[in-house]
Image (cartoon, rainbow, N blue to C red; front, side, top):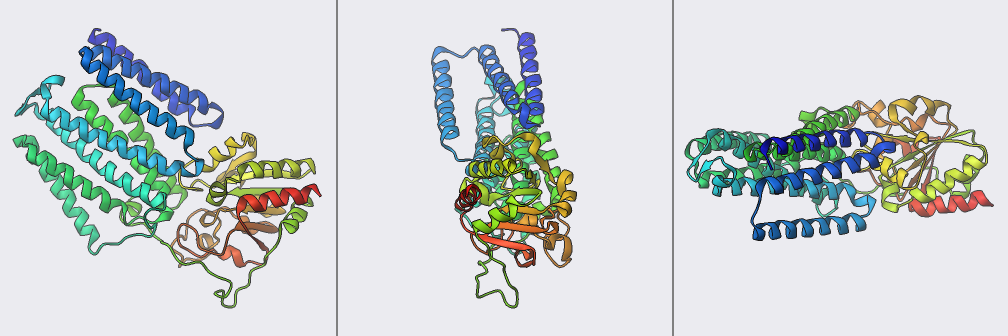
Length: 466
């Protein structure tokens, strides 16, 4: 295959990747977007194989690797629960980062294979590209591993604050830059692996201080890192498809991180430099002081919603954990049969990653026209009879709007407390992922429904049928 034709095919795959991103921007076109992405990746892989022209033995190894990786990916996609999707994404980001490290190492030890020079005499430009790609890849790997452990509950979501952590990070950053410069001059293999080690440590130290409330931003940020790592290695390999793909992922991840930070009223720098909140113990019934909680039953909730004119449902991570979306859809269908107007309100950072709630509702075949973002529906709560909150804690906390001393003050929330009645399904009065007590629980118009989300919704469905 000629290089010109290969460049054309890479351009075609790049266009398909752009169309994939565009398709993924809306639920109705997301399937088509995924298809574009798969076709584009298929073209890129086949083009690379035909251009490289590997030997029969090499081709067998490549096909075997694709089969093993594809098989693992297919089985994982088949078995993974939607509640575990955020940590799966973080895990995949770590693989992209490690792949960048391994490819850079291969280029260092066999530069003749990709035409960037010989061992000990690699082109200066390639050395810079290689070192930047491997540094970003290593940071992405360990940072994503820590994010996975936090999201999967294998590590505490509480921020781990090391003494003088900012100075340590600055020192490591300066050391990383110095090592990159020294490596570009000397081409020392020892310096290459020192870059890897320093970047791996920096990836851990950047993520461990970040608390659970900021984890959605971390996921999108690591997505951006993985893209830039791929782009850096793409320049080293002189692979146009990898450069285009990496740049698309890196830029889109950065834009998404900005949008997420805006949705949380947080600056991107403040998230990177330390996070906020942490875990706190649950507030039990004997630990309320002079505050009181109004507790209700499934029958109470069914009666209130059945006689309401308008109900707005606010899903959160509690719904995801309980897998209550299908029961929720059944409940909404019954309410609509009674003539009740029902809408869904989605906060930009509900769940553990962007779009988490939208995907869960789509899984239950909730009509897209019934689902509204915060800025489109927030003004309607004041004219709503019942706000039905199912496991969405931090994004409904009035402290973010009313308490200047609160760590989450200024974060946009769904104004569920402005509805005539707020029904809140939760297992206990424990704080949310941000580790901050929710003052909504103690308001006069709030009725707490203490139960597993799925069981409570199923009981409400039964009560509506009576």
